[in-house]
Length: 162
Ligand SMILES: [Zn+2]
Image 1: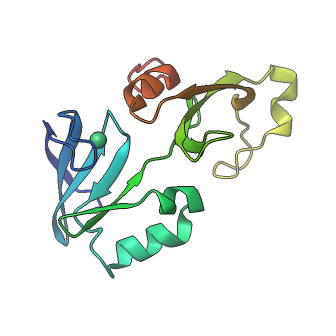
Image 2 (image 1 turned 60 degrees about the vertical axis):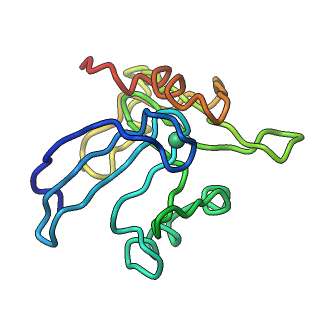
């Protein structure tokens, strides 16, 4: 679907007003699509997320209730907090803060699976191969809802080590 990435730039976030909203433009067979991910509040949207669109319908079907409840609408587009899984690095997702009505970001980091245990973790997308990392669910780190950048750094989103 994504054919050519035109450009990336930082714009003002429609959700939190920070100037760290990352805008990307793609050329697709259906025409240009803009995507946004704010590094301050972690909200994301794209130019196909209009009311009654197929893209929004699919998102609502696949998305957890908390994320749906946090939806914001700006200029006719729906925005949601993002959730990111990078199998070799970790995950970031929004979570309610216990004892409050508020929410924040949770980071889980990937840790290596000992070689003699890897056969217990088959990779369904590559039959015959096994995962080398798993999510360390015992060690969660929590961040304020406007600290998405710190959460992303903690997960290792910006480090391209192999
Ligand atoms: Zn924002």
